[in-house]
Every structure is written in C-alpha cells, then in structure tokens.
Amino acid sequence: MKQVIVVNESLGLPCGKLAAQVAHAAIGAFLQAKYSVRAEWLATGMTKVVLACASTEALLALQEQAAAAALPQFLVADAGRTVVAAGTVTCLGIGPAADEAISAVTGTLKLLA
View (tube, rainbow, N blue to C red):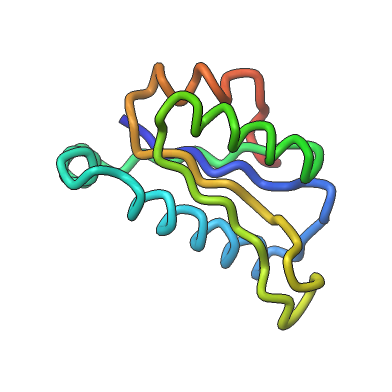
C-alpha cells in the first residue's frame, strides 16, 4: 500500500508552498479512498512517495489514468492567495492503494528532487 503525490515541477514552487500543496493532495486523495483501504494504509505505516512531472497537462493526463484505474485521486487547484494565480494546478494525490496499481500509472516518473 502506498500513496503518491505528483508535483507540477514547472511551477518552481517555494518549499513552504510546495509542502502545503502536497499536504492538500495527500489529504484529499486519502478522503477519496474507501474506509477499509484507509484503515489498512494507516495500519501499515502510511507510505508516501512524492514524484515530479513536467506540466499541468501531464498532471491532468495522470489524473485521467488514475480515474480510469479506479484509484482514489485528488487534483489540487490553488486558491490563488499567495504565490500562484487562482486555479493553478499544483499537484495530484493518488491513493492510498496497492503499490502495483499506483505504479502502473506513475511508474515512469522520477522522485521530486
């Protein structure tokens, strides 16, 4: 079991803003999962992996793939109060779900550096 958060690297978000957006994605996707999946993930250590993608378009494509695979997912569009304009797509949370199911969607992406 794991959860993956994919960050829109093209935005070059400052560390604090990036952390907040990742947290939004993690909680949002968690709440989309079935209760039994959430309970199992919580009981097994809440593995999270943060990956990078190149653009908003790439995040939207990943969201479509995750939805097609029936994975819990949550796309974060910023409120626009600080660093980026309202509606800017910053990241995507996928899971918790089985490692293999998430890797089928995100397996080619690199860790966020």
